Image (tube, rainbow, N blue to C red; front, top):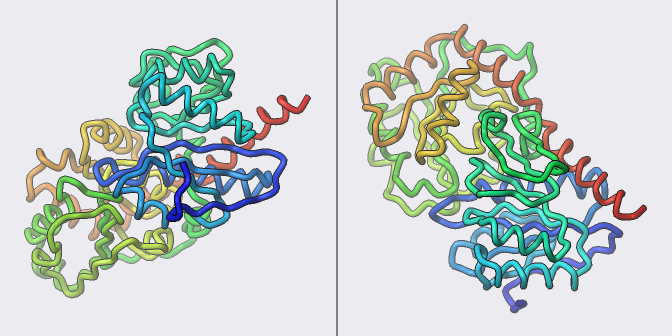
Length: 365
């Protein structure tokens, strides 16, 4: 299970949490980012040692760089969606003397969860769409707006931590949260474009091409920053740039700072929206997966963001005109900022960390 490329950090701590999460060029880094936010809260507030298990593949090589050295890292070669893999995971959990297992995996199944439950492993599941038949676990965390509407089948004593109140947002985004008295320019000139950690559909290039339809007077004074995540494998997006200034930033380590500096953001519809809401940057949402369509529509219904539509369905004119409207409308941006920050206060990771801490305290009694 260990090899020379792995980074292992030995930390003396009474309580220890094991994270098992998905990350790849296909699904991006959202699962890992929210686990890191929770791990940071556990470590900072409760001095809990956190360790990460990641699958062995090309994708995880760049993912390792996202994990701070304070957390342990292990490779994992067994299947993540069957009983055999779950049994091996349960064995490792016991042998390494962990207290809680946090699961955030893309291909989660009921047999996988049931095997862990039967082995006596206390599990906290981070989930998005209630896609599993049943959830035999200690707690389910779903920080999306739609979470309370989903029909989760779980034991009566399973704790359900639902909605943006439990948004797993890193502390850096809270630090860059816009103050209510922060001045909003009459005309916005700083636009940030981010389509997640991988952007497998090439939505970034699609957006830049669509924005060519904005009025020339708007384009000429626009400073565009394009964020390409570590899993991005697409074309040179600058070939579609027609702005006064356009910068491409790869593997942005200071994402919260960039969000805070932008006047407006065009974002994919994943967990990044919760980070944007916390910071308070007025945002337009483009869904790059079917699941994100519901997420984007919910944010518009709540008045926290503008939803553009699905990346393969919305037309270029709609993208350009909606973006131009938000750039030119100061009152609209103020409204979006106020509502988004009301929905996400940036303390959700600490609330989930407090719950996990309380569960570990029960085990000490």
